[in-house]
Structures are given as C-alpha cells and as structure tokens.
Amino acid sequence: MRIGDAAAAAGATPRALRLYEQRGLLPPPVRTSSGQREYGPGEIARVRVIRELLALGLTIEDLRGCADRLHLLGQDPPPRCGSVEPGSPGSGVVGRRLAALDAEIDRLAHLRESLALHASGALTRRPSGTG
Image 1 (tube, rainbow, N blue to C red):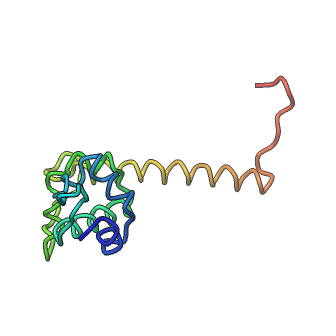
Image 2 (cartoon, rainbow, N blue to C red):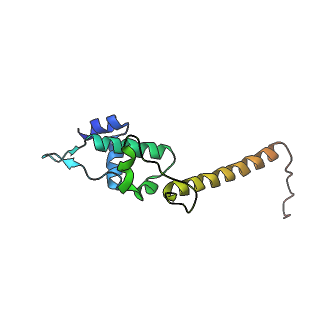
C-alpha cells in the first residue's frame, strides 16, 4: 500500500511516516520501480505502536533508543515491559519518562499552590528595594 493509504490506515499522515523513517523509527520501506514507498501490515502495526507511545508522552528521541524493539509491541498480545522502578531491568525509557512526569507534576503542584496563595491574598507584596 502506498504512503497515503498506509498513513490513513495507521491514523497518521504521510509526513509523519516520512519523519518516523528519517528518525529511524521505521525501517526504509520497499520502493516501487517508480520510487514510491510501499508499506505492508507490519509497518502499519509499527506506526500504530509509535503513535500510541507518543500519545502516552514518550518522545521520538525516547523511541529512537529502542527502535530495534518496537516491532515486538505490535505482537498480540504485546510482551510485558517489566518493572519501571529505577535501576531494574526494563526501566529504561519508560522509567525515565515516568521520572520526568513526576518532576513536572511536582513543579506544577508547587506552582498551583503558590498561585492559590497569591490569589487568596496570603502572599503579600514586598515594597520595592527590599529583599
């Protein structure tokens, strides 16, 4: 199937498929004699996995580190990823992303608390020139 049909089947765009190929997430597809990309069911499944992982908050750079194993997630049922505890086997990309999300949640919770205190008048303004 050609790139437009493959993209539609995977819920993506042709531009996304070319990007995934450029970044090493998709292997270069077979080309027709006229040079057009041809995709099969395996590539469609892989693009769906990529899109699902991106929707979960992983980045293209995160996925590049495990691109050689992305095809495994297209299996039915997909293999278990193992523990996500730092330092445990399988923690890798998912563990780092979870840690980054936890840090961002902490930052946002602190920001929310500060804004709520400010809005309630609990924070007072300091006169200019005082520290």
